[in-house]
Image 1: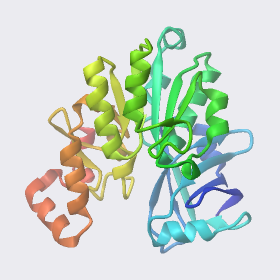
Image 2: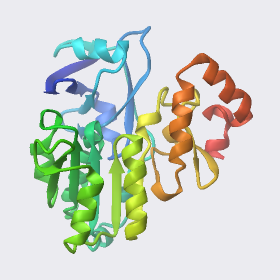
Image 3: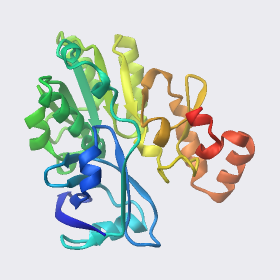
Length: 293
């Protein structure tokens, strides 16, 4: 059993929890995720590791209830426990593999959309711990669902908040802020975008025009988290990949977002899954070996 140490409601429908998970905390790196189960019959729910503390033996998750099991998660309180917490899973952020001295010479911009702020935070924190201050844009529909502003400000070089309705910070989509910063003379060597797929798609369309290499995290399409269910199958540079085992990070310019979004719609129905299985053959499931060949 994995005890809940803390619980916080970040907005009307977004929660933060601190979980007791010593082994996960000891081995976690930014960009990785874990899988939780509320009870022995519960769904496997993949969630990004928002923060980790090896001394406390604890990891932090941020989630938004969108189904029965995540709704049950939101009803748990400190002292309650999860049946399973498995991780860390997935490949760490590519930034953790770059020499810190090289990182210090790079200008990096993070773009977070909604709950995508949670996986951006540990990367910013890791960079700051290694002497690198990156800029970040945090986008939300309105002021009441802006999350983790104080924590983000503490680890970013500059934090730009923007809301679609203009109720807080700058006004407009995150792409408008990217363009504004560029027009103001800001230049970046790398952009990391994490959030809804439609957001990441249009960030990549803009950054490609501006000549800014862009990494995206395909967390939004993961379901099982092990490569076996096939939900997170996507095409990257014309090759079959699975977000949970090959990613979750990929070169944003090489991801076929339109195909991934259409596939997500089909995957939600039994009929759609059957059609995809027939069309995709041996590459339908992550367990085929294609993703790790």
